Amino acid sequence: MKPATTGLLHKLIRNALAFTLSAVPLVAYAAFPDKPVTIVVPFGVGGSSDAQARVIAQELSKKWGQPVVVDNRAGGQTVIGTSLVAKAKPDGYTILYIAFAWITNQYLIKELPYKASDLAPITSLGRYPLALMVRSDVPATTVAEYVAYAKAQNRPMNFGISTIGASMHLAALEFANQTGIEMVFPPYKSGSIGALNDLIGKQIDGIFEGAVYKPHADGGRVKALFMGQTNRMPGWDLPSATEVGLPTFDMTAWYGLMVPSATPGAIQEQLSADVRSVLAQPSVRERFAGLGVIAGGMSPKEFSAFLDAQHLKLGSFIERNRAQLGQ
Image 1 (cartoon, rainbow, N blue to C red):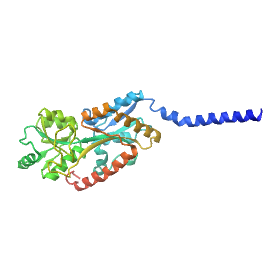
Image 2: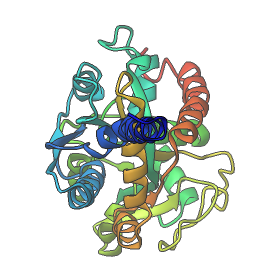
Image 3: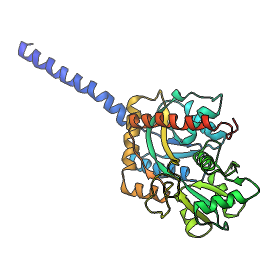
């Protein structure tokens, strides 16, 4: 073979090999997912968490051309569902929906069946501002009037919660701390839906929940008195915590997604990018707004930093309130 021909052949082989090697990670990356994906929601069917997950699942299924199933695994203060994902195969096909309890459980439960390091953050789904909702027959239309009414009763106020350490629990506890109202917190296995139904039925005194239940306030079935954050929420004409004389009250729920930490980095990045692209869709943001959720979309690094900050905030809150939390 002539030298020129040999050189040309070697060049062609090198180019073909380079193309093949460069294509390998792209092919592996593009192949995901090639079977159904599951989003585990550690809450019951019917609440805001379940609804959010189903919006995301529906849109990801369209994007991927694969079924995305929502698996509700309520119970154990979200430990059951969380443990399931922590022990799942780290291949990206099992995703965990997280909320406040992801952090609060690490302070409230001594022996968890998983470590925080077992899961890696993918992205934030959104924020869920909480409003104080009370019985419709209470003779109060302002927070000041409600506080006076509650203190005049010869019993503690019953504020329903979905689970110990949930956002609605910590919000109610903080409200009790800042106003001096005596409270007890009956947990509901059926989640916030069960608590809302009992509030409508006048079986309990109040809950902290989001705008997903605004229609019940608009319809007069419950009274909404203020939004539990420092500013008003667009679309709901409720005074902020600052406006009602509680300038340091800020208990906003949040949600996100995680996967087993051993999941390949390329798959973690793809999951994050794909979910964030879904969250960026105007139609999805509108559907989230209808659930009372302000859509998120943090990168894994941003969400990790956010979770670190929440650890400091919520951990400090729990340490100050261990007695009230039954610890």
